[in-house]
Length: 268
Image 1 (cartoon, helix red, strand yellow):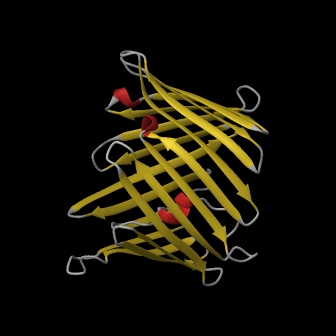
Image 2: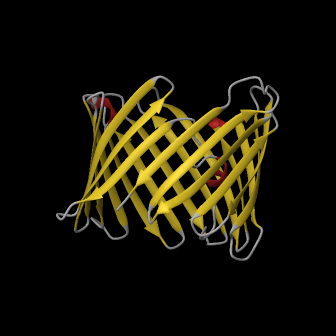
Image 3: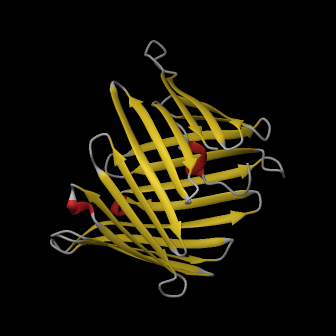
C-alpha cells in the first residue's frame, strides 16, 4: 500500500457480493480494450469498453449487453489548468452532461450541466493545503428552482493519519471518520467511522482495518454496530492482474446465508 488512504477506500473499495471477470488489452494503435462479465444474484451482465488517448483528448466508449452506449470525451488544457468532460448515453439522451473543472495549487472548482429538457446544475469547490482542506457541493434544479443536494466537509491529513467530517443529504446526515497508519511503511491501517441520520435518529458505527501481508497480498476487514462483518483478500497473481475474494456475514444471525464475491481483473 502506497500513500495516504481515506476511510471510504478502506470500508467500501473492492467489497462486493458479485462475481466479476474483466480482461484488459492494449492494441498497437494505443487503444485500451476492457471486456467485463458480471453476475449479481441471478442476473448476468457484460460490457466492452474502449479507451483512446490522442494528445490532450481522451475518448472513452462502453457498450453493454442491454445495448446501452456510454460515451465520454475528456479534453485537458482548452484553457490553462482546466479539464472539460462531455458524456452521453444512448438511447437515453436525457443523461448527457457537460462538466468543466479548474485546478489550482490550493483550490479546485467544477461545474456540471445536465443536457436535457430540465437541466440541473452541479457546482463543487475545494480549497486548502496538503494538510487541511474545505469542500462544498450543491445541485440546483433550474426547472423547479430548488436545491436537489448540498454537502460540505473538512479533512485533515497528516503523514500517519487522515480525518474528515462531512455534512450531507441537505443537512440530514453527518459522517466523521479517522484513519491511522500503524507503521511507517503504511503496510497496515485502522479506520473508525460514525454516521448519523437526523430524520430517522439512526446511528451507524463501523471499524475496520487493512494489512499488507506482502507486496502482492492485501487483507481488509470491517464490522459495524449492526453485526455486519465483511472481509476480503486481494492478491496480485501476475503483475497488474488481481484476484479479489470478499465476503459478508451477519454475526447476529449466523443461520442466514453469507454473501460472497469474486473478482478477477487481468491486465497484460
